[in-house]
Image (cartoon, rainbow, N blue to C red; front, side, top):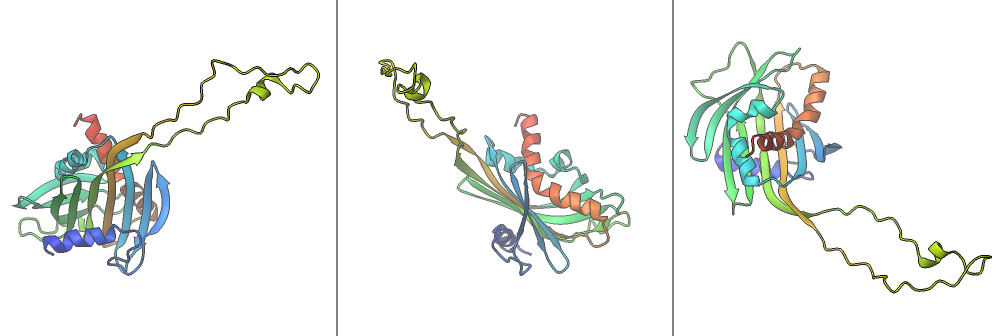
Length: 248
C-alpha cells in the first residue's frame, strides 16, 4: 500500500466508534495505568488499541524515539530483535521485528513504516506488512501479517483535577449551639478572610492512540494472547518511560 492509504487506514481505525476495516466497532475492555484498552475482532486478524495521556512528555521527542526501531526491544517485552532492512525515503523505511511468544513458535513481521507530522503538534507513525528481496521469510519464524499498526501523538493540555475539599466547619459548629446549656453567642472573627478562588491548573503533555491489527498466522497459547492483548496497548506509555530514563 502507498503512504496515504496506510496513514488514512490508521487514522480511521483510531476512532473508537469507527467500523474501520473490520466492519465492527472497538470494544472497551479496561483501563490500566491511565490507558484505555480496546479490542476488536476481524475475520482473520485481531486488533488491540490503547488511548491515553502522558503528562510532561513532548510528542516530537517521543515520535523521534519511536522512529528508531532499535529502541523497540527496550520497551517491548515481546520483541527480541529488530533490523532496518531498507531506508526507502526520508519519510519511510522497512523494518523487521522478531517476537517471542513462548510456548508458541517465535514470530517475525516485515513492515513498511511511514511517518508524517502536522504543524509540529501531531505526529503519525503508521505501518503495514510488506515484502523485500533481502528479507524473505525465515524457517525459524512464522511471519505475521500486520494489516495496519502505528501511533498517533498530539500535544494536548488537560485540566488538572483538584482533590476534594473537606467541608469547613461553620463558626456555630465550632462554638456550639447558644440555645443549649453552656452555649454562647458567637463573636465574628475579625481576622477571618473569605476563601481565595483557586486558579485552574493545566497540564501539558502528549495524547496518544496506539493500534495493532495483526494475524498471528498460527496457534498461540490463550494465556499468552491474553497477556499480549492487555500489555500491548500500554506500549507507548512504556516507551515514554524508557525515553525519560535515558534523559531525552
